[in-house]
Image (cartoon, rainbow, N blue to C red; front, side, top):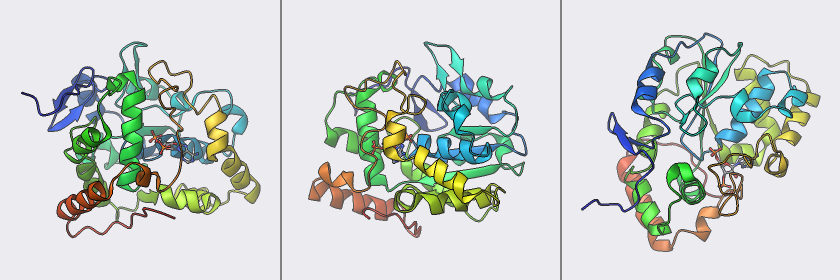
Length: 296
Ligand code: A3P
């Protein structure tokens, strides 16, 4: 008997990682050979780390704060999801990305070894966003429930937690993803940032990202505009960022922009679950000291 009841639509294992059918093997193969440009900007995250938030911010920095354009085109078209193939709409992220003018802002959730070969053969910039894994896991649980792409998970929170810790979720193990990208932190084209720091001082993070993106001349006014446009409330109500039109997400169950806070894990984890999580974390991340913040 299968260990887990829940089966993702089109579920498959690719090079040791579990994937949903929206990242099919042929697309994952094609991603490896994706033609990366020197001036591409990659948004690298494990699901639910705050990907959409970073996509919107980075797209605006790269496009000199062009809020007018951001208000008329969906974030997922301005910044395609590389390894995603929408089986219903027949849209493939890497096909959307191919004809896009430079500089492209491309989203991926892939672990290092599955990312395009060109990602480290060029000087393309890679922004890697981390979020404390307890909040991330809670966010993933709710997304699994609300999204038909994940099969509208009907199981319980403890069941999901077990699946997450086991790496039995779409895109595979969080530990695997995190260790792989953390190992690349000394690469001058890799910039690691934290969801919690963005919550603490968004303007400061926008300035630091701008420097990394060779846009250190960004004006205070543009930083202000981007920060206002990208605050939780603004993105939650903005039809270009809140994914309300995405057929697979049932926002009545849980919207993409759900709570947007640090520490929501405390309303889901029991003391025992949190202790168990810490224990497993210590075991799997031995010798790796990533400064995650579990509360502000
Ligand atoms: P919660 O479910 O905890 O609310 P992703 O884009 O990687 O799928 O991540 C989604 C998570 O990022 C959700 O977390 C969502 O609320 C949060 N998020 C998105 N935009 C945000 C913003 N502007 N400020 C804070 N959190 C944001």
